[in-house]
Image (tube, rainbow, N blue to C red; front, side, top):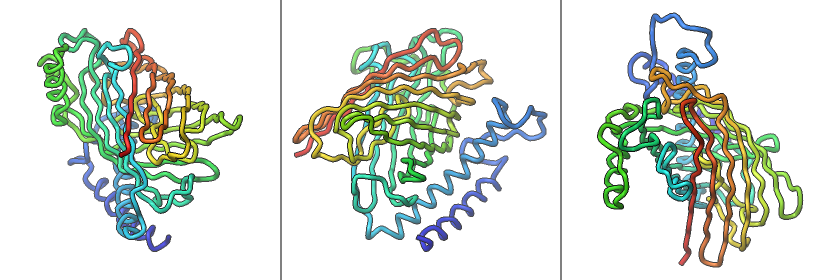
Length: 359
């Protein structure tokens, strides 16, 4: 273990120092202002947010370097253990094509043999996570004054899953690419044109969030509590710093055996947990309910300098169903997303879908 961690620490420190030394130049989308009087460090101040983003930049450099080192050292022992994905779209929900309008996430996991629970060592189980998301105003063709700006986001990240002090832990980092350079605005216009539905106007795309690359760190702690043989409660805490900075607390309630002895990964938009390492022996259905609340201190998608004021809390309520058959699996879930900014006139309902076939 020491032979893997020490080189990783040295690489991580070197890369982190490079991030710090580049302050004021180009630091992966982190903005710095020099010679400006500011309020106290923490809270929704530019200095506090800048410091958090600098920390996120250093942590993402360290995390990725650690994973690269672990992957290189143990390449002969590691194997691909699973793959999972989840598509979220308001077309599967309230059908109104607005705000958190669409997202796609996929995960690939590598590690040693899976015995039904997370390993005890950090970095033994490595996840590569790819995702995309489109955020849009209520009216794609003519956005109302004060409505959220259009934004397209692509991300790639490395995460690890392990046990710590009796808790299920997850820690990782993502690079989030935002703006016209993501190509998602043009992609949505092309898809909507083919489908014959309303597409974002050029004016809407011209007002989208500008190009940038934002390092983001994500951490979660949770624990499964067996209430009955087929009923489990899972409280969890989550923290994010980067493209959006927040702390979140919630619970998930699952009834059924599908998902038992598996690795499930939490999707960022809805909070649904999708199956990545599966136990095909557990056939049938599992039903789930979940609720969580977040306090958000900063959001690149709702910039303060454009006049957006974040809500005091960001709430989610979700319900879903996993199904496991002999040669196929499926998931469908609905999520209510509460208001994210004070000018947002209501919440929204999005749907999430995943279908897999084995041949």
